[in-house]
Image (tube, rainbow, N blue to C red; front, side):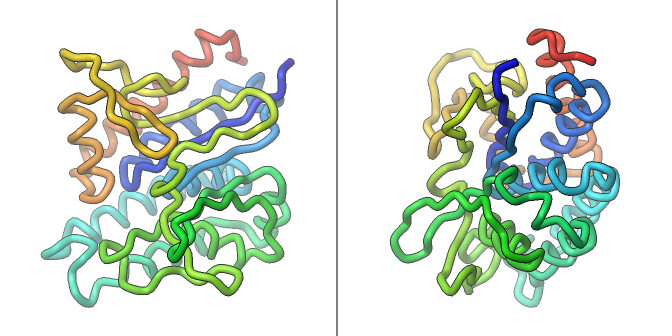
Length: 253
């Protein structure tokens, strides 16, 4: 079978969709996963990819953290930007809780994290990690949105970095076929069906989505998490869309 990769789009709190898709791959996609060489992602997509590569047995724990994290942001008067609320520390605590001790070894050459250099604005794909802490810093860098998540960019290997979604929101790896996953309706392999009236496209860094009210709503939800009920619906949608993809591609197991 052709070498396959999985790539998860940058999408903030809408990344609960990714966790649904990951759940479907783990439950029904053995045939797919046996052929997957690597996973890639930016921001929330990088976090989902990291869980699949290094801690698939902690998927439920990751989902529970995502719900708690979203609730903590919703409780703030100004969301993540509320003075005194440390968005990045909360995220780091969650990553620390989920990633196993040997996460960096499991991730080497199998996890590709999209990050953006703060000064030059250039993209960098990181796939080698000397320690668990270095892996965590790469994931934090890929999730850092200036002002929204804090004022100080994440330091990684002596330089400042920010959200990989600014420069490559849906990485495509050079070897093999990259299967793309996105909570936004578009032309990705795993994504919601388009429910808009027009076929106008909205171009994001290395990702094109359809211009629709539903996608505009989800772009907003990426930064301002919706209710737990809505997040649960997104999670279920990710699971269902991934199962449909597996059936369509004859990758069910």
